[in-house]
Each structure stands twice: as structure tokens, then as C-alpha cells.
Amino acid sequence: MPLKECIWICDSKNIGYAAPNSSKILLDSYSTDKKILSLPEYIDQKSDSLRSRFLSEIHALGEMNIRGKKVQEHLQVSAGASYWWMSALAEKSPFKYDFIEDVIRVLAIMDLLVERKPNKVCILIEGKPNLVTSIKRACSTLGITIQIIGSTGLTPKFNAIVGIKKLPLAVQAIGIGLLEIYKKRGLGERGSIIRAAKNGGEILFLSYFIHLDFKSIEKGCFRSAQWNILPDIIESLGLNYNFFHHFLYSADVRSPASGNKYLDFLNGPHDKNGNHFFIDSFWCWSVQFNIWWEWIRLQFKTFHLLNIENLLQKKSLTLIIWPIIKDAWDDSLRGPLSMRNCKFQVIFSEILKNIPRQKIGIYIFEGQPWEKAFIYFWRKYGHGKLIGVSNSTMPFWHLYLYEDKRAYNSLGEFSYSLPYPDILAVNGLDGFNASLSAGIPLEKLAVVEALRYLDLPIKKRMPFKEKKNFNKKIKILILGGIIKEETVFILDLLSNLEPCIRLNIDLHIKLHPYCVFDMSKYALNDVSELNNSLSEIINEYDFVLAENSTSAAVDAILCGVPVFVVTKGNHLNLSPIFKGGAEIFIRDADSLVKVILNFINKKEYREVNNVSYCLDKKITKWVKLINDNV
Image 1: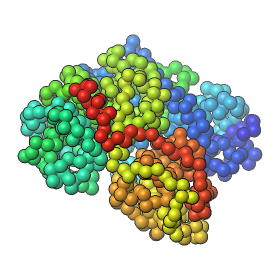
Image 2 (image 1 turned 90 degrees about the vertical axis):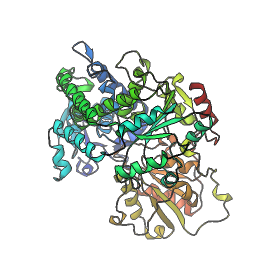
Image 3 (image 1 turned 180 degrees about the vertical axis):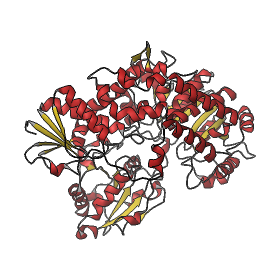
């Protein structure tokens, strides 16, 4: 981009209104126009630096000294984990919160402005007033004149959700708390659960009541896609286990009554499957009173932190990005998130002080707020070693998996330090290297078998020239993800293909179980929707088009099926194979057509999407890890 006196920062809807001969930064999309600098592409190129600075800034906010105490210390309300580590800011989930992408954008824009040194910046961005305010503050700090062109805010259509969000945060928090009581009433009986847990169990699993084989459960057999044969192996070692589940609604479990029914199958009159409980079964009105009391204490103890913006240093990066992160901060202290976090503090304290000492705890490591409360009380009540399991992948931009290196260096130093497992079990070299490069201490890491992938029909991809039979049509499988607009972007690209190409392809789609939508609304009448297990169908396809964030892309790669990730650019590249190489990413119609034509004409492409996981079905690494820590 040539040096200009004025730089325009525009979103994809308004880039056409920028001055014709000016320098342009496109905020939320990739671009084939070499005269336009695509911010998503720049973020991809500078990802290591941007991620490191983001993590550093969030950590610095938690370390900020107010009235002689760190923010982390102020948020340790009672004898529990510091609420800082349970806040939206510390969680850093791009699937839950928009502020992450916008903060990364501000960091990238500031780098570009320092590099280009413009005299003026014009902004034409709709629907992101907080982002625009942060860019204004950045320009002011850098001494750059700024001009806002047009409207930056959009008035959302009024509906129930919009109406609820207009209520005071405290009202929302109380309402959400009451709603969760109503939705999960009747989950088991607390007294019988405590008695059952005391009857046995040396290893505690903490997981979600999803990804289960419910047909097997009806026969009294516990089968989980997340844990595979690990519970059976633990039983073969002569160890008993307790399984605590987060209750979740699903197509198979539509009510607490149906959840209880499945637990009855598992806890039937047999000596297998261990003991199974729902975490919410420990709820009772005395527990609820303690939750409300904890929340009230949180309100009083953190009242002086509500206006923390006034305490930030002028021209500091935290002050620049504060308009973006303020809503997440307020929700963490006053909103529905604060009430949920109080619930987890009280519930896990109640569970872990009432069950016998567990020699080992094993849970899914996802950086969720509840994990911090669980870890804190696990240690407080004297249980054994705690193993967090990275059950899937460790994608670069899944920031809830990572912390600033200073947080790792101070583990266990203070009562308000980051609650972290004794061991982080990663399922191959990819996860090990990603963790190590992020600063996770070597002594915390253990490489184990990838339980999720053991049942896949693993095979190496066969080159075109060695294939003897080709279907007349190229079979393409679309793997939807949890971000609906990214899946819809794939459908839009396919619907605009030339008829001559569409006639040569056979399209099928498997939607994400938590992002199912009506396919009839989109102009693709020839797409078949599938509900089969991915392992049953994956080898029928010539290649896969994967949504930006789905970890199912790795399943396809392990099965030897070529994978291309489709990304629009308005979100971070959340793909588990983000570092796999530019050739595997499809960003526009032209690159999609090129891929399809290569397969139609049986041309080779450079193999870039290899992955490395431990897939020994005897799970010897897991056995050793259990034996070493029991």
C-alpha cells in the first residue's frame, strides 16, 4: 500500500464509498484487490505477535493495582477461586464474546497506523460503535486526525432477547438464576447421590452429558465419544470411578426426567459403569441461598471496580480498548455470568467436600469458568492429582486454551493465582507443540492417545494417479460449524457456481449439532443433509469443505480425505489447521472454483494438511498416566 495522507477504514458493506485514490483497510473480509489491504489477511500474517499482545494486555488488567491490591485479589470474594479467572475477559472465548475479535482488530490497526504514519483516518463502519470509539482513542493517542463518515450504530429489531438485554444487569442475573432452577429442577436426589458416591470410586470424571451412545446406555452400557474405552480400561485396572455430568438438553435428552432415566440405566443393578451423577443434583434450597448470598457479597466487594475505567492510565492500551471490553467486564461483575459463576463456586464446594477423597480427577480442559472453581475446591478439600484433558485440538485462536506466560510462571504462588490442573493431557505432537510454544510449562504436559479419534477409519490419502475408479460426479461433504454465518457463507459460494460446475458435483452437508438450521431457506435444493456419524460416511467423499471453526476437519484429515477450510474473514481464523498453509483455505468464489476444477480434472495439489495424533487403541500412554498418579 503506497503512503497516503489519508487512510480509510471500512467494512465490506461500505468499502465502495471510500475515496477512489485513497489507501483503504478492509475491516471484515478478504480482498482480491491489491489496492485494498485486508485486515483479516494482515491478522493471519501477524498472528503470533497479535495473540501474544492480546494475552499480555488481558493479564495486565488482572494484575492492575487498585487500592494496594491486584484486580485478581479484589475478585477473590470468599474462600474460593478468584472471580477474575471466571470472568469473560479471562475466559477469552471467541465463540461467546465479540470483544476478542475487535480488540485484535484494534491492535492490528494500531500497528498499521504506526507503520503508515497517515495524517488522517476516515472511518466508515456500521454496527460497531464500541470498535469505532476504540479506533478514535488509538488515533488520538498516535496524534492522527480522525473523521467518522456515516452511522456507526445499527438499531436492532426489537424482540424478547433485545428486551431482556435492556434490563438492568442485576435483574438479568436474578432472572437467569431463577430460569436455571426451573429448567433443571428434579435432577436426582442430593442425599442419595452423596450416599452412592461414598460407596466407592477412586477416580472422578467431570464431563458433559452429550456425545453419548444412548442406545447402549439403555442396555446398561456406558459409551462416550469423548472418553471412548478409557472408563473400561480404568475398571480393568481394578479402579472404580465416579462420573459427574453437566446436564445439557439435546435431541436425546429433552427434559430432566429423561436425563434421570438414562442415569437409572447406568446406575442399575450391575457392577460396571461406575457411579453417574448430575452436578445440578447437588442443588437444594440451602445451596441456592448460599449462591444468592455469594452473589450479594460479590456485588458489595466489587462495587468500587465498576468504574475501573476512571483509574486507567491516560493513553494506555487498556484505556483504548475499554469501550470494547466494558460490557464483558460488567457482565462478569453484575450480569448473568456473575450469577452462574457464583453457582459453580457453591456447587463444586458442596460436591467436593461431601464425597470421599478421589485419587485422580479427570475433566475436559476447555478454559471454561466452571473449571476454575472445580480446580480450586478440588485442591482445598485434599483430593489427588488433577488431569485436564485436551480432548480434541488446540487451535491457535481458541484463546480460552491459553494464558499469558506470566500466569503460568506464578501457578500456585498466591491463593488468587490461576487455577490450573496438575497435568494437561494432550493427544499428540500437534497439541504438545502448540502448548509448549504458548508457554505452558513442560512439566505440566503429558502426551496421551486421542480418545476422540480412536474409532475413525484411519487411512492415508491415495493420490489421484493411483485411483482406479472415479465417480462421474465429485462428492463433496460440507462440515458445518458452530458459527452459523460461516456455514451459510459456504452455501452462498456453492449456490453461485456456474451450472456446468454444479452438474459435476454431488453435495452433502453435516451440520454441527449445536448449529442446526432450516436448509430450505437457501438456494441449494440439491444438497442432502446427513445425520450419520462422520466415521461412517467420511471415506465416501472426494474432499471436504469445512466451516472456519469446526474441529471435525481433523477427523476428515485423519481418514485420508482432503480438507479445505472456507473462511469469510469477519471472524478470526478459528480452524484447527490454521497453520496448515494458505492453499487449504478458500476465501472467495474463485478459489472454490479452482479447487473443484482440480478434482474434476484429477489434478494433484500440494499436501499441506497433515496432523499428528497418538492413535494406539491399547491406550498404553493413558494406562501409564493413570498408574503413575493413582
